[in-house]
Amino acid sequence: MLPPQLVVAVAAAFALRYRSQKGQRSPTITGKTARVLEAKSQEQDKAAREAEAKADALDAAVFDLKAVNPNAVVRIDARTPEEVILSIGDQVEIAAQALKTLRALLQA
Image (cartoon, rainbow, N blue to C red; front, side, top):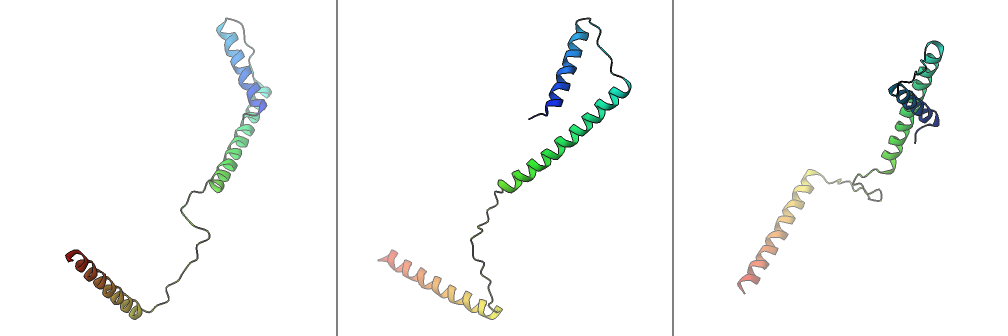
């Protein structure tokens, strides 16, 4: 949503443009008034950037779609390399036995 001051400023700018297109004399903004309007414009730009940064931070926090299970239990493998090699050997034997059983079932 735009700040009300910005809406008024934009409406005034459009009114000035419309008057100048219709041949009417438009008031000129100079000196102190121009500096004040420029300062207000810069303040509003800064406020808009800050609001956008806050919105982006909220968006990132609320809509974080990483595939992470916060309830997952982390298990650390504390086996030695020798124990890992023995485990792999055991798994190979289990797979060989399963293949032997499958081949027997296919031939029966």
